[in-house]
Image 1 (cartoon, rainbow, N blue to C red):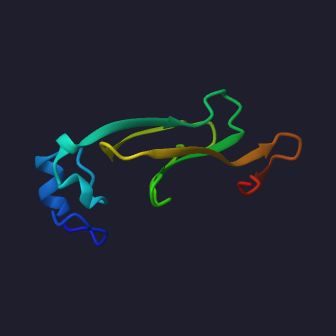
Image 2 (image 1 turned 90 degrees about the horizontal axis):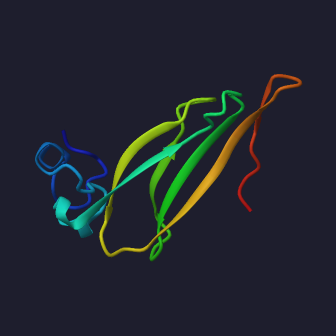
Length: 115
């Protein structure tokens, strides 16, 4: 399998089975998982109200490039996943509500765009 987003010179098929934890989207890791840290994200609304949707985004500070956009599993269902980030880089994080359900009218209302 070769990703059309390949940027580090190592095909995803070679990277994934042999070096789990490397970041196929970032050439700075050299295809080596020793150059990365694993970030486990869980985001969502576990309250039982099933009334909110959430995203969590990770940005490379130097470039502002989005490196992770993690979504919940749906209304009332938190979603978890692991991501590889390159060691030595600075990152910023943003949690963003993507929508909510108004219980009085049972209508999905999109969240306001970020300020």
